[in-house]
Each structure stands twice: as structure tokens, then as C-alpha cells.
Image (cartoon, rainbow, N blue to C red; front, side, top):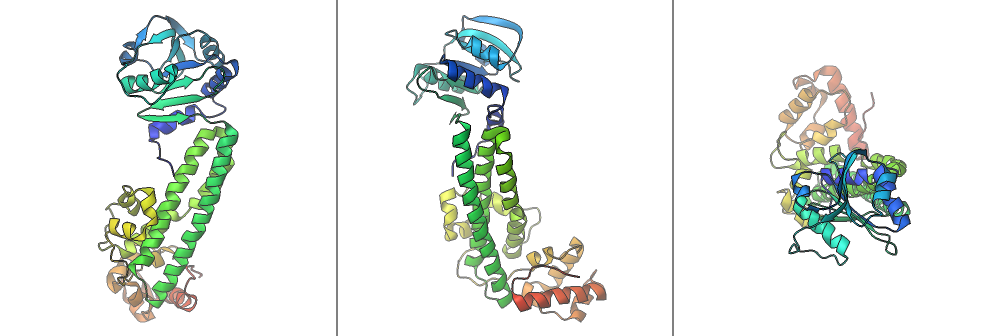
Length: 355
């Protein structure tokens, strides 16, 4: 899984997605083989890098205009909102001592400009290479053609679907272990590990969808369907087993944010990051996940049940009379809860509620 771009970098990818005016300009420039160096934003830092060329007064940005202006040797400056072309045929003079791994003059200049101006810089190769790269905030992203992006997105979607199934398997196994009262930290950590991986893989799919623009809508819908319920599942499981139940504390995903993706495959690393080790320690849930599946059960009643019984085993085996004594439950709701708990004890994974 690749590094996830920041929100502002995602916006640049969105502006350069297939079907946008800016991407149309890139495609035109590639076809005509002239190459281009375009600064996406103006200001004092950009002006300090410019020499020569000419200013354009109120020249609205269009793909055709940008492509025509790229036929001149110099670079082009757009305004911050990419609505106007500010300057054309400019010679950019960045600091030549700034480090760069690029080899071509245009791309070396683009990377250095990005470092000095804090603006996205678009570099399009001349005839023969067919490469367009945007540099910004220390990143280098090549604009890939839609067929390549579609293949990547579909492959990631297949991986996401497979990982989502494995998460479901981990949830079913945890449910059976909870009913049988044989849960250990490893069971909990494995589920949370897979939930975190699903979230990260989903983010990768969404980034590729953004690069695809409107052509990635179907893939986005399929990915959204696979991610549904994952955050809620991980949250309730973590609240069930964390040493301290804190409503406003760091979420499970926030606690795992600093864990590299390759370490998320290591159960012991995840358990340590969540403060839940050792792996073979026996644990009991509070019953938060079980109660989250009961419809129209107020949070105040859930809290009262959890506070009264302290753990899932005591709650799931409680007789109707004891359930009804909990504040906010009452006789009718106690009967419904008892029926739900009985079905759960019978089948081990029937996390549904029928009235």
C-alpha cells in the first residue's frame, strides 16, 4: 500500500483527473509533443523565481489556450484557483543547489520550483517520453492513463473484497468465543488488525478513484459497500476490550495511525499499540457490541446495562427479573433482551434482533 496523500494533495489529483479541463490540456500537450512547465498558483514566491516572459491580463484558463502557450519555450503561471493564465513564456530560475533526483532539465526545475514556491508544479515531457508529473510538498506523482488506473483500482477492489471477508470471519470467530467465554487478546487484536487494513486499503482505492475522475464512480460505489460498518465494528470491539472505557478518548484507528502498514500484519504489534497485550491473556467483553445490534435501545439503557452487569457473560446469562431491574429496561424490554440473548447462546453468531 502506498503512502496516503494529504487532503490538499488529493484536491490536486482531483483537478488533474481525466475529464477535467487541466487534464485535457495535459493530454493536448502530450499529443503535440511540445512539453510544458506550469506553476499552479501565483504570488510573491513564484514571482521571485520568474524572469522574462509576459503577463496576460484577464486571460481565462482553457485547455486549448494552455496547450497553445506551451508551444513557446518558456513556462506558464496560473492563478491559485486555476481560472486564469497569469504569465507565459517565463524562464524559471530556482536555486540550483536544491537536491533533486530528476535527470531532465524540465523535471529538475519543476521539483526545485515546488520546494521553493510551495506550489504544485506540473511538468509535461516533450515528444518521445509521454510523461506528465506533478510535484508538491515533497511528493512526485505521475499522471497515469485511465486504463492503467482502472486496472489498479480493480485489483485493489478485489483485494479489499478478500480482506473484508477475512474480517467477517474474524468477527464470527470472536462472537463464538465470546459466547463460549474463551476469548483471548489474540482474537480481539486479529479483528482490529483486519479492520485497520480494510480501512487503509479502502483509502488506496479511493485515491485511485479520485485520479480516475468520473470514470471511477462504479468502483467507488463498490468500495463504499465493502467498507460499510467496518468503523462501527472496530469501535465497539475496542470499547468492549480496552482496559479503560473512554467515550472521548483516541479511537482505535487513531491509536494505530502511527503503525506502518507492514506492521499491521503482525498481531503482537497491533496488540502492543492498543495496550492490550499479552496475546494469550484471557479477556471478557463488556457487552457493548452485543447491545449495539439491538434496535431502538437508547444509549442510556445500554450504559445502564453495562454498568450493572460489568461484563458480557453476566449480562447474557441474566434472568428476566434481573434485566428488568436495570434502570430504563422494564419488563417488556427485559423479555425482548432475554429472547435475543437466548438465540445468541444457541447459535453463537446470530447477532440480529427480531421482535
